Length: 120
Length: 107
Image (tube, each protein chain N blue to C red):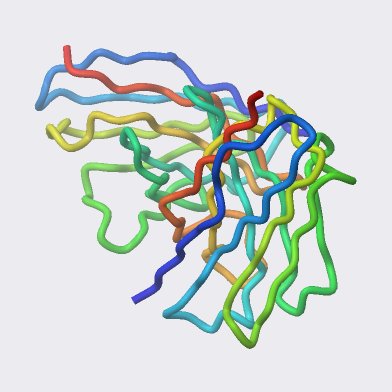
């Protein structure tokens, strides 16, 4: 059974940092790109970042580029998202998502999400 | 980036009735369109991809149609568990983008 589980969210002050982690199981993790998608309170879904299966290619939405860093450890079946210089507008539930196909861009498994709140 | 626009924002439907949700893309996305269902406090669930292919296990009352810029999600006979927010998403061009959602509520 495919499982995806995020952790690491919490309350942080503006300008602060957090590291989100996503643990995956039940599929050939090392063959799949992985994605982070976020949802601000009461709002829609926004793709945030992607990483290729090998980890050599990373992508970011414009609003987080230079502040967020995605990485993965295929030996541990984990993907991480380092959030730096956080802003109030980064407040959201962050979901780790598995593509339906290894390099696809629609998502068949999502974790339950981890809430990041940026507030003083 | 491609802008996805969903209508209506809210759809009030009685159980057993048909619901028709629309999604429009700002430029052609061919058939590269997915639909998700999201219930309060839960992660999105993939229902349909390539505009009309149902995910294994999704009831046949859910159907998708359309191509290019105009897409429709139809729920043939609404069940109580279908009241939720539905999002469309294009994956034809980078970055993948989502519509703002249609809330299907009990009339």
